[in-house]
Image (cartoon, rainbow, N blue to C red; front, side):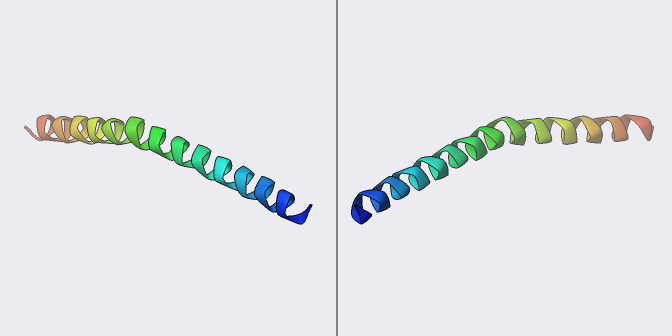
Length: 51
C-alpha cells in the first residue's frame, strides 16, 4: 500500500514538473524574440529621435 502510494505521488510530481518545464520553454521561445524585437525597435526609435 505504502509503495503504491509513493509511486503514485512520484508519478504526479514528475508529471507536474514536466508540465512546468513545458510552460517555461514555451514562454522562453515566445518571450525572447519578443523582447529582442521590442529592444531593437526602441533603439531604432531613439536613434531616429536624436537627429
